[in-house]
Amino acid sequence: MNAENMIEIINKKRNKMQLSKEELKYAVMGYVNGEIPDYQMSALLMAICLNGMSDEETFNLTEIMYNSGDHLDLSDIKGFKIDKHSTGGVGDKTTLLLAPIVASLGVKVPKMSGRGLGHTGGTIDKLESIPGFKVSLTMDEFKKQLNEVGAVITGQTANLVPADKKIYALRDVTGTVSSIPLIASSIMSKKLASGADKILIDLKVGNGALVKTMKDAKKLAELMVKIGKKHKHDTICVLTNMSEPLGNNIGNALEVLEAIELLKGNVHNDLYDLIVYMASYMVSLGKNIKIEDAKKEVIETIKNGKAYDKFLEMVKAQGGDITKIKVAPKIFSIKSNKAGYINTINTEGLGEIVKEIGGGRETKDDVIDYGVGIVLSKKVGDHVDKEEEILKIYVDKKDMEIRRILSCFTIEEKKKSKEPLIYDVIM
Image (cartoon, rainbow, N blue to C red; front, side, top):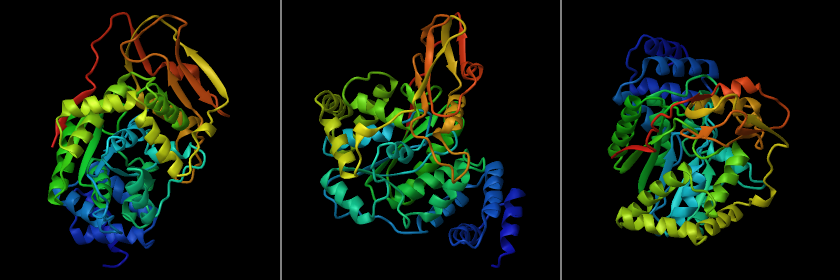
């Protein structure tokens, strides 16, 4: 193939035709090696986003990305290793919590995470709000900490699935985030390369997720389970509710602070309920015990402070100092303009607002303001009086129109029934 073939590949996918493994490899590896420019890869990603891919194309794309760099061999690490991934949502700080909770109970959690994608925050961005926290570890450092601490969260190393790392950043700024085959291949190429024994995926569904509908969520879950089986890796997908922000805090530093409070036993909200559910699944798999017994252990490790101690141990091992976390200096109380029940929240809208005030990226090179964000005082199902606080917004330099923030909330006289937190489990 020569350089002109990239145009043919773009045109082929634009015309809803299937790409061969050779064509996909040419495009992906050419982009990784710097031979194909951003604008051509962006065009191909958009064509995929609009026209989709067959299962065979997705399997091939995953394999090409998986083989674009090194694979992490964790066979010399003692104990059961389970990797966890979330497809991303507003206020989703689950990784910060699950890694120390599960590790405190003797199950090792090797975790390679990404940065923010679209309106959703990234675990690595959240961890970087902890001054000194080292998010780039070598494979030797990664394995040493996993062995000694039992939990490690790092960004992708330069040589681990470099194809995904480069394409992931491009998708974030080209409107090509919400594509089922691109999401599946991105997640599974990383998970397969990370060397864990089993993979648990928290697949967010709803207006604040990358996947909006149950139909698409089940399609994505089934696709990822198929990819896992093809590579002899058991993969379990838990479909969870993202029709409102998870927890109360949105924004990097604010989310870390909420995670800390939960680990101290001071938070009992939807975030706590989801964490207990997911951690129980992970501990049950890791220790080969009943879910009910795992749940008791999870609740106890939070209650007795061992999970928080493990979090501090992990942060210290990676050079972080939680006493130096800073939030934005300007705090505005936003009050409701009417009384009633909050029946819906435009979760993606709130995520976009946090991104616009500096909490996310508009371009690949944007610098994040880690201290900005939103703290919700009310959530779906809560009653609010007129002139009662609905949220606080933390800003540094930019201000935000109050009317636009309030437009993210539907407040009505009659209370509607609330969606469940857990929708389904697919394995």
